[in-house]
Amino acid sequence: MTGGNIEPGKGRLDFAFDALSAELGRRLEARINEEIAAARVIVVDFVGREMADAYPALIRVAAHLIPREIDPLRVIDIVGLDKQADGGTHVLSAAEMGSVAVTGTESRGKANKRIRIEVR
Image 1: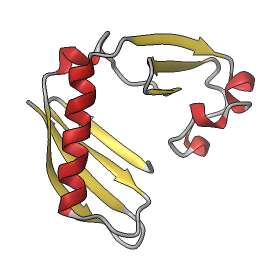
Image 2 (image 1 turned 60 degrees about the horizontal axis):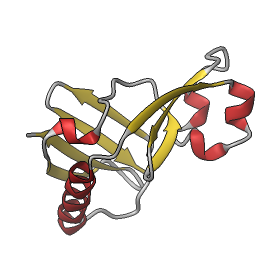
Image 3 (image 1 turned 90 degrees about the vertical axis):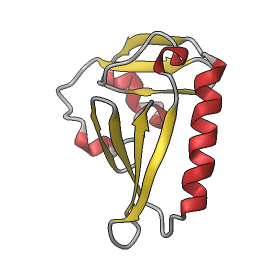
């Protein structure tokens, strides 16, 4: 993931993909909604920057964008699915979200693709 934006009820996710199809958008929507229905517990923790640097999987969004002086990092663990540094607002369980619809897929240039979503 190379970027994103969240607004009330909608958002966008940017990825470094060479190609992106509407079919992939439909598959992503189905998988996202399966995970929401799984109602996984979400755990919030704080990890020192040095420890986070030792585990690159914790910082997947272009790590150079997170200033070094941010220490500790807030880590969101969607138990059994994903664990990474994240400063965003989060629910206590994915089941609180309702459903998600992929409303668009688009090319933003070579190896830069965008997926638009809405929470319903």
